[in-house]
Image (cartoon, rainbow, N blue to C red; front, top):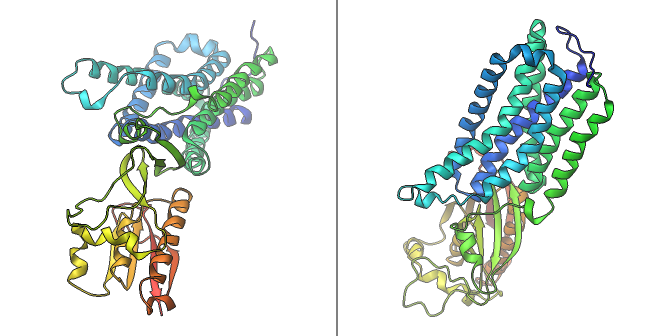
Amino acid sequence: MFEYTTQPGTLPPGVGVALSLGSAAALAYEILLTRLFAIIQWHHFAYMMISVALLGYGAAGTMVTLFRPQLESRFVPAFAAAAAAFGATAMACFLLVQALPFNALEFLWDLWQPLWLLAIYLLLFVPFFFAAVCVCLAFTRYAAQARRVYTFDVVGAAFGSLGVILALFALPPATVLACVAALGAIAAALFWLTAGARPRGAALLPLVLAVAALVAAQTPTGQLRISQYKSLSKALEGMGARVLAERSSPLGQVTVVESKAVPFRYAPGLSLNAPQSPPDQLGLFTDGEGFSALNRYDGSRETLAFLDYLTSALPYHLTSEPRVLILGAGAGMDVLQALYHGAAAVDAASRMPASVGVSLRAAVAMRLRATTASDSSRATSRMLKWSRSAPRSRPFADDSASMWSLASHA
């Protein structure tokens, strides 16, 4: 038999904190899903998370209104159960979504695909429903202190929105998902304890859920499964292909792939008159798509001779020592091409933040230094200045775009 001591109209600080944690977990989950769907599917489906969240909140409000007397009389167990259910379903429902055979490319002619999309909606609707039940119950129970309830709710949501962005800089997306689920479970345990509910040992149940979510994130079952129809999945099907490195951030997950048996040969617009093929390359994918290539450079300028036989080399034959701006530097091939043709300065713009692109920029920087040093006797006395400047005012219709400058100096 459950016992509890909270009184209507009196919002205990501990209960308010539990409400804040639940709101933080819900908003973090919504934002995180946009990132997860951009990785496992395509970014177009990330935006539907907003409508899924609204559906969950609307359904919860309707349910609480219809069953208000029953829920008010069982407020503490109902709130704690809803918070714990959010923690349990946040990760479980996403893992079930990954198991569905949804293929966006067949949506128009395969009648099963709309049904699989509906199943995705229904599964992801569940965690938001439970999170919203907590908020609705708090407003119902403490209606006389609606302003305080709203304050705890909004403050928690604000910290959750900011916290998930910061967490994505430091942790893999799958681990962040487990942390969000654990946060909901912790909110349930905290609420149970601060509400004076009995037995107090029942608070251990959601804590066990939190630990289970964190452990599951470290297993193969808890990892992200990218759609088999994305470019990265196809590249990894090649004989001997393997992932060399992977970095993630709120803006993208960058994966570097090596394929020795079936090597990458990426040189768009390469002339048939080219004296040699491109050097060994590593494939670089952003969110499983957006392929670009990292070129092996051994210090010899002749290694990059193929860059002069691309259609993009034409402008360099119409001028000398130009100042070049490259939008979307990718793996750095365009930057190499500019310096190969004697560019006086190169400004390369990339959406990759430092936490994702540091190894990539370091690799490109080493190649650029070697290229400049072997370019000519005049260039041997020059050095590249590699510096990150502050983001310009919406330079590429993206507030998070950053600029890296490679300027040569005498």
